[in-house]
Picture (cartoon, rainbow, N blue to C red):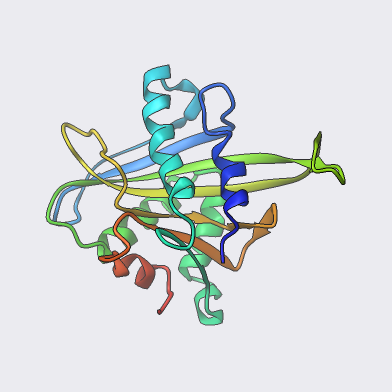
Amino acid sequence: MINREDMLELTRRMTLSRTSITRIAGSYMDSDGEIDGTFNTNFLKLSSAEKGKKLLIAKEIPFSPTNENLRRYKFPDHSMKPGSIWQLLMGIKSCGLKNDVLMETFYELTAEYYQSDQDYAVLVFHDRYDIPVKAADHERLWESEEVFEYIICAVCPLKGDYEPDKPVCGFLFPAFSDRSEEPNCVDVFQADSRHPHLELLYMLGITT
């Protein structure tokens, strides 16, 4: 189960003045899964307007109703072996999205699984959150207790010329639990929980 307070702790920082997102990368795909173009840039180099738009997309994943639209899944042991999607995600996180080969591998893997009848974008965000220490009365002391490094992936239909709409599915990896990293788990987002994109779970090596 996902603790709502953990997610709110992350989303409270997803504003123009407080964000610590370091980088954003993405791929524009046609309905057949062919890559139309990619980008990879320092998040702070975006204009304020673009940062605001992209923050709304990133925030949609952890801010969605917990344990309804956002659910936690544990990676099976066989999904965490060398050459697995888990290893790929760990590599993407560790390099802060700066390895174009890993990013392209991820886009191609997504296109292989994801089913769409329209053009869409795959957006990936990288963040480093210095988790502040909390005193016994739950007041923040602000000394960094741990750094939570994670990525958010959002799959968004395109509503115009390379303009992503709200995400229809995505995930936060590693999972954030009890104010700490849970590397064996992933929090998966489905905008429509009644008609989920199960292919995203299959891509992650998770069976329900």
